[in-house]
Image 1 (cartoon, rainbow, N blue to C red):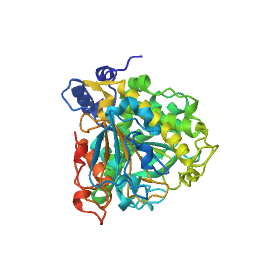
Image 2: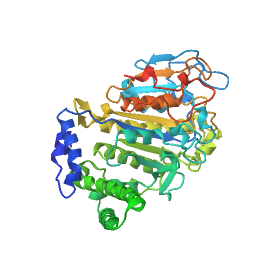
Image 3: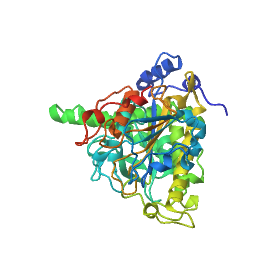
Image 4: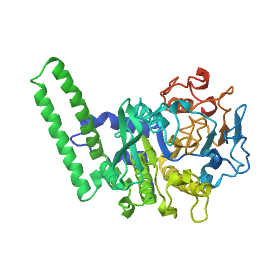
Length: 458
């Protein structure tokens, strides 16, 4: 089946009762189709638990300078093109995207604390062990690039019965965002309008309830005044926002039906690989259908969810044990963790390929997307956050430079930078620049953790 163009998607809309609220959105889409408005910018965060040893990202023919503790050890920025480099085993699935790939070593995040997981701090740049102290970068980008679903959170934990968990993302201080662990329920929430059976019934029931709640609140509002009326209006705005989202989903039913994922047994599987595979399918479909501009996928991320086994890869050993250097069936911990990491990059490569099939502007949806891969526990199973490796896939409409290996100076040396600056870079690329993000490291200068990374700005 040939991919749909944005004009074809626009032509599939059928305005109904929600048309008045939807009209401004449709005008914006029409302007984009005509080239009169900027194309959307999309962000996907993939967080894998249990640490990310820098050596597992190192190109094979590019030696990595490191100290006795294994920390990247440069006195100045090391910048190398990836074009002639041979990717390591874990990154080999991204070989076809090498010119869109950026490997980053040497950034620190010591204000996050360290340990088995930095939880909310990994995306928020603060100590997130006891809960969110502020917004995380995925939420900040969702606010900058709003959509029907501001941010879609998906993921897996070690327990298949988990439904919603709150582990890595937050809208604001003490306002954690959920991660849906069951692909079948995530499918109903995102594509319930075209679901069959119980999914469609649940979707319709939710719509009716929202209609009733809004009308009811409006009737009560007429009998109130002053502070009580103002408080009720806050509730009303929340209900209307939800109903607006449902109305917009109704209007793009045709698009959902054509581009939504086909539900297979993997959506109901208890296997980790199946569940993660299904979540990546959902992420691709949600982006292609225009349901969201920000997706966060958490794979065994968070202190309480890291003890996961990838039996689908033939590894019946918990990742916590792998982190403690245990072996399994003749494979050492490096081989085991690299195999699991490679599976994640296979899914990332497939997601990128799907977005590359969808025309957008003078290119494709992939051209306007960046996928950010990291571990919630930085560089090791027991992390110190002195180094936090990242992998970026995508150029975000030319806002980001790619096709490179970047290693920043070691912590404490001139020119060192932090993950806060990387997140400022993403915000800059999204058109929402900030000088700072999260909590500053008191041991570093402002110049080392403020503003974007100039080397990444396109």
